[in-house]
Image (cartoon, rainbow, N blue to C red; front, side, top):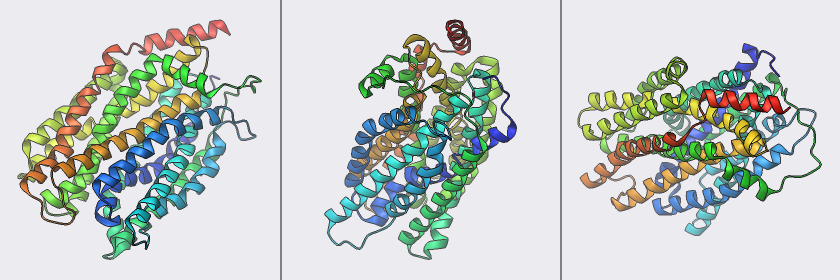
Length: 446
């Protein structure tokens, strides 16, 4: 169990979510814009779709966790899903960004519901096993935290690259036809997802092998175990606020560029300048966390995100240079907390094992997938409601009231949400010392 994990294996594990984060970035940050401005449904209809999909995820995500926990194969418990599921969600990703030839509005809505919800289910079928994999590669807490840093760092690079390249790819393949551009971009990101997950499949090894249990865990019992896991619940609540902050900012930037700055191309500029600051924040996590602890580090970076966003909001959009400065400050704190968040979720596995009597890596990590998708939906619903309230009209010159609403979506909502993400951490007690104590107590029982 204490076998040293090689750099090659860490890198293979880290590459896994690179392509996945590209397609997720396309979905999370461009889907609402695609539905309203390209596909041709109202912001209210799109917001309802995102909400319905997330309600289903409340059942689908933990169910996938239970399925993964019960899986036994010659490839291990979680690795098989990295081989097959990416192939299956490719057509759903492409069809989500395909405008059908239907003339009836209801038919287009049905198409949108089937393709998007289908994609979400298959995304879960790969994402839950991937993150659960970190708990069976090693049981050593220090190595696990080090291991998790690789996919978080590389996934963030994938997100940053997707933010910069998506608009150029849409323009390049669309040649004036944005619908085709979105479709081809979805295809490219999906193929990249398959390639990256296959690298992970062949490059990592499951070392923690649990014997088959004769007593099957009931779905209701697994859910009860989640509810009793107080540290996990606190991370989930905080992560939802952080996810809303991140997704609201990134989803609204394209509207800000198009309707406040009058140039869609500026979106690529803003996203591109953000990249080094996002990566800087992630690189600062290990040394700062080592010095002050992961909980205080998590709070610190959320505070940077909130303060930078507040300054961004009060700057307005008349001075692009100052806008970029405060936007970059907020970006330092935007993705850094995710590194610690994943490590915190992994720590709750041992907490559950000692205090509740169940380990259940799959269902515990399903909360992370559900968290990402529910925050994407809540952000989409919030933005859709605000667009409607501020009388947004697609592809038209917007009123000053609408422009102010777009700025609020881009900066004020992220600022408030990032600040709220700090609150649950005042009750989170599973720091490094407590986790080490739990690990020793588990060893003593074995």
